[in-house]
Image (cartoon, rainbow, N blue to C red; front, side, top):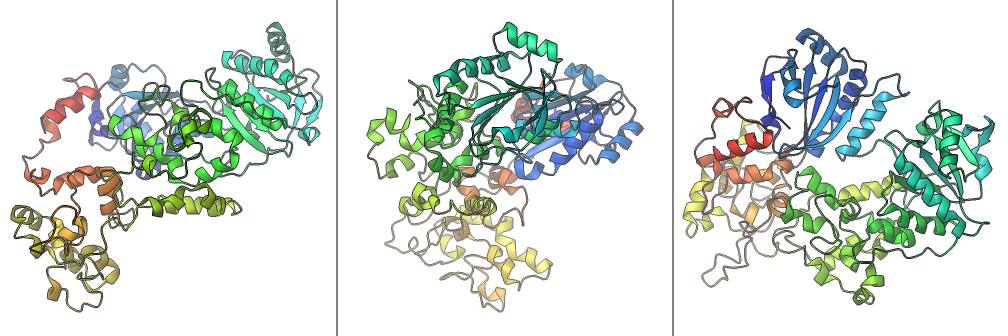
Length: 631
């Protein structure tokens, strides 16, 4: 994305390079354009999730003067910086010709998606259309959905519609007791044609008595045009063809982001799976397996012959196991990378996907979405025991877990303790719980663990570390952790035991700061965030004959996000330090006290006036690199 800079609507300087380091959404809008209002409302709806999902938003007001743009921003509750581009210089630099544009930019400054505006008259709910597009592109939770979740199939919404050919009424209740395929399509869409061709050719392979019935929903076009096109291409094979000119069906099923959108519904009227879009390389095999299952037949095992198939394919036959896997953080492992702007970092990706650097496994470019997360094939081998027979009788997976859960990335990992969290058998006990309870359990499992540091040794205080680590002690003593109690004293909270737990060393633990302490000054060595708060108790480390290696935790070889965040996050959580999760590496760098000087004690970073202007650099990538060279 080309670099640009300017003044915001409230007169503050802004440069596009300010967005580097995390994902961003740049909202270009002309406040007088009809598409601008729905887009602004959609952006405002997702703006509250910036902190939790680590992305920034910036606006660029096009065309109209500052007063009109300010009124527009106030009306729609836009609380992010908006550059005044009344002169059109930014639009020209970006090459923008539309009055409304939503551009997604990655942490390195590359455009990763684009969405245009939607006028209010084009669809009944233009705001929801734009919001859905943004949530999908930014990987945010959907507001609602009709996909099976945590082992529960949602009921297919009942509907009444008109047939496209004869305009006669059609009731979804007439489908009761038999599986059906509901496909929303556009008669001129090639992907829709591929999906319809597949259904036409595959369904006759199934028993006529039990095979799913196809119900097609045309989203646009006159009856004559749709029928003529389908007949010309030999796709008029299904008797039930419905019109959705009033958007009633699309609204009921949440079909607002594109077509084809395919719902496979079982005989009980529940949605077994949903296929959005059509990928000729994967979807035919996946849908063919589901069609057979819905027809009551044995699904054909259509696994990738030479590569990885993905958990979706396994879920057709192993539906219960898939539901229990969804109750683990393995199932959302890739989302962690997205939030931390690490989804393209090769040193991180391998432990968050299936088949990294293996034939037919996950690739970053193009991203193999079906192989995201720590799926079935990570633990059970490519294609599971079907294609990896060495896993058929495997009961101990410690060696598999250890490929990622090592000391650099997973401090305190103990196979026996962790196994129940990802065990299909253990999670199956939760199957009968309501969906809300399952979601609560999953959220709790995603919280940082608080028992990473060793617990068997006694704490001895930071002064005991000084004799061997004089330089490190000296550096630490000048940093905020060494004065952590002062911040409580300034607020009159030095006797607040809830606060003392994070502002002292080893609160209430053997050798640590006592819970019943009356005067913190009596325990001055422990009345601060000392060495052992981060490195663990030193009782087994300081003795004259004590083993030095392995008795405390060294952090220089640990992953900042995977391990150090877990240690720091017990106190620097969302309540006490919002956003710390995404700044941990920068903050730790600023207070390092090992062999490398902390960033806070190095030469100061030049201010923005010393950095190149938009006229001097051609792209955000260049701006980032230049700024990095200058410190």
